[in-house]
View 1 (cartoon, rainbow, N blue to C red):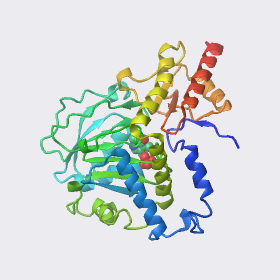
View 2 (cartoon, rainbow, N blue to C red):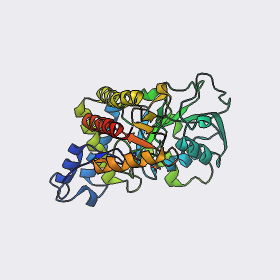
View 3 (cartoon, rainbow, N blue to C red):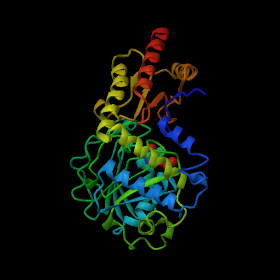
View 4 (cartoon, helix red, strand yellow):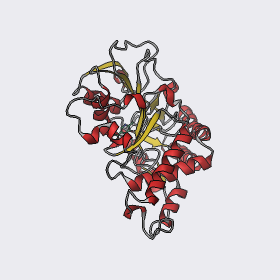
Length: 360
Ligand SMILES: *Cc1c(COP(=O)(O)O)cnc(C)c1O
């Protein structure tokens, strides 16, 4: 068996310790004589798994008591519809469009009410975060929506927008648990777990209680109402049980690593190695405005599509997987989530140096 350095944007690298534990428990979870995949979601064993997962997540993120945690399905993309169906009481929401995911959320919301694009960075291929200190927030906006870390373009909000008192809703799929956040500044924090937490199939939604009501758009399906899931503690129907179990293991791993302050330091240290190299390289260039750089997703280019392709091919042969950039940006992207070790990033940079020497 040999493991590669996996720079995939998602589904992405998971901590090896977690995978090994899951493997060891595959046939017999904790003396139950069965895999977590095979057990009732109403069983004592699973109840403990989901309750522990929630408690650990609350501890890691310091989630205030007046917020509910929900483990849902449908991907982050389903939230693009579920959020407006549940939160658009005035049928108005403001969107800051900083990439494809924010744009999709904006487009989907416009099916249910008036979605306003109050700022965008599309004019420069989403390579920066717009100034959000004094935006034209709508008087009657039910919420202001952002995608906090732009997985495809590699930008991240370093400061939350001034929403002028309106509820902030944030898609944190690709920066979930990468650093501490102040949950109380948001109405909703949500994300698909397959970027930085666990296997595809689970979406975690952290929502302030007063936003969870029966007052939803007419025709909203039971399964798409937050109240359904909040009231049933994510057990209204069969949840993505195995995925939640793995997320729980990752929460334990994060706690053992020292929590989110430590992860932030680690992530900054890892990203710095790569950005420092990119800043002095004569061949590779980062594509993002320096102040808005993501710690998680690092896109870069050589400026020559053939050379990019050669790099991706040779990197793969050397054990660096999934470095090809998103089709809309081209070039390369290294996603360096929590579970990517420091050694993975330094090894990549050494490989890039060598490639640069050989091909310049
Ligand atoms: C991957 C991603 C999504 C889409 O997630 P799905 O679970 O595939 O629907 C949405 N937002 C962000 C920021 C992402 O990185």
